[in-house]
Image (cartoon, rainbow, N blue to C red; front, side, top):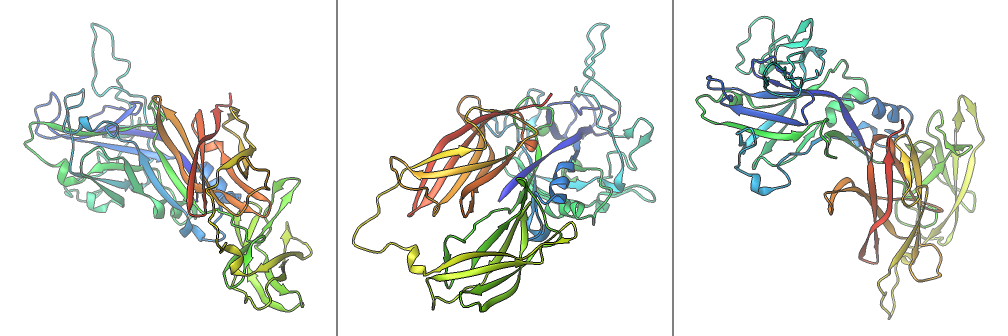
Length: 484
């Protein structure tokens, strides 16, 4: 599985019955209870945002992220926001600098902005208008969006987007009329947001859902409507304007793993074969996925017209059902047919593979295997290189047994992990352990800088072999920088 990150293109925290705009505040503060310095028994806030899906849609349209093998069901999307209290358990049941008690035992909802209402994020920062002598507070703004307004000349259909008492009649929107995308329970109040948006985003990407202008996060109406409270409770998350690495994002997971069995095609097992298409080194897509015939060395057709599928740009996979071991070891042939590019039909492509017995995968005897230490070399990203955030790099990984002159090891399961470091030794994960592609001539993974924030990045390598799991820290280190 690989990941893509989509970031917010606008957001704002709106306050109950207030024209205040706080869109540029580095913290998203969702609160409920008694309003500070206001003599009414309740008050609350809601967060609205929109996600820029343009790069994600472009990747799907070009086959960089393919739905050919799994459909959209193989793509998941999770909204992630980091809790400002997640780093220190001592903050539990404490008060914030604004005097608000940290909320615990509550639920948040993720809802779609109703009626496809267009809105602006605004330029405000402060929650209150702090007057200093005769100077205005330039960080305070009451320009839209806010509780009442979407833009300077338009209002929300219902103030605050919806009525949490379900008392609107006629035109307007009640809570009961919202599309709730997901809910999440917070037991201690320091948990990070992880909303499942899979169905919502996939419906946008495949065109069945149109006109969406964003989403909102809020407490349940039962929490917002609690009255008679003497304290105010809040939970905070880093906003897109944070000065840290914890900017919120939508994480897309998709399956583009290549596990080519051409060099180790085992009888009586299901195996995968791949075809790679390039035009002067650039991956190309065919007009449609080819069909594949499997033929033995007597020219007998074992399987006819197996359907292949697009794994990623220029890479097609066919899954071959088990073949009997009766004739192993021997050569078989895979013939890829119906290859067309821009309407032009190309000839059949014939490749070969050797069928081997399952016993060849095991080492059985009187001696034991010694633990292996691995060494790695990389091609595609240089050590300590500065990379523009417009690059897409194919990183070839050569794996050898350390302190040995033996040949390259391809029959292992390597993984990579990407992270940045913050505050000295704290590792902030960018991408969890991901299987490295295995082809007939080695291993590689694709690193896309376009959805990565400028920072110094580190890559760890993990190898699974002979029941051992060996992890190698900071094998590759580089920087991503902005293109001016």
